[in-house]
Length: 399
Ligand code: SF4
Ligand code: SF4
Image (cartoon, protein in one colour):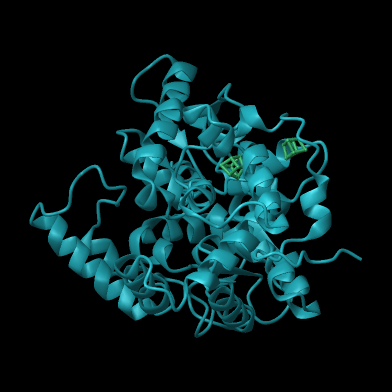
């Protein structure tokens, strides 16, 4: 049985010892690729964690910076031959840093802003919807800078409720989430359209089933994430699959078993499916064939965490000519709230992805498929036409 270190981060001893410093993960790390710095690599971050745990390095600004600049894409974890569980080590480290920050005067304005986002807006869907209407008004008045990775909101879409009932005993649950429902509800309409085309009855979660807590886990706010996870589990009872069209949310929900460590949470996690994964299991509905080539961009949480990115190709392959990228699934720099908290690094990482996408098809305006709202919005902000696989499938279903 593994033990926890007695150092200030309380990391798993076996996980810390597992890294043999081979460096095979380095080419897969987006922050190492754009900075070339060991401190911004997985190996360097693990070495810093070890030193802090051993007491030979303080938790200072440079340590915090090395940790907060990690996109948490987990590409290093997928590439590591020693199976170092980097994602959970980084989540533990962030949680320790967040806890130690409480009660200090450090970064008061930032902490106040985080409190509003994580405690007030994300878990209370009504507040998020109200904030979205305010954002829409600001967009109409041209008060929102175009460089921010925000969607072009539509009052028509926002005012129209999603035609999926809450609760019941469906064949499958359609998880609607917080930001997806507020900002990308048309993608939920496409998802519902495709799910129903397979012959399935669908329902959305009951009360409390809005925010999955993925962003909270990333930010080290684990207790809040646990509370949200319990609410999500209670909102979708029974055995029916839980279909998630946001790769980041799906990854977090597939890890509820680890987060809560209960039989119920593990059973719930086993029911979670990415949208494309579920469609392939259920049988891809017949569609017309489109002549548009589609570049497939794998969200990190679909490829490296859920490891179900191949299902997107099966779901779309009959309807579209798919184009693969040759960058080994390198991160696009969206990373949950990363594009907002680390804009310079996020942009530098995105530039490489945009080049890879344009080079893959040899044209400046390709259509890109991406199954994660963060990646969609981040790449759209760079001028690309990015669509969700559900939107693409719904379009060819409708001819
Ligand atoms: S994390 Fe894995 S791949 Fe990276 S240096 Fe350590 S052992 Fe090697
Ligand atoms: S999670 Fe991503 S950004 Fe962080 S160290 Fe690993 S590869 Fe680099």
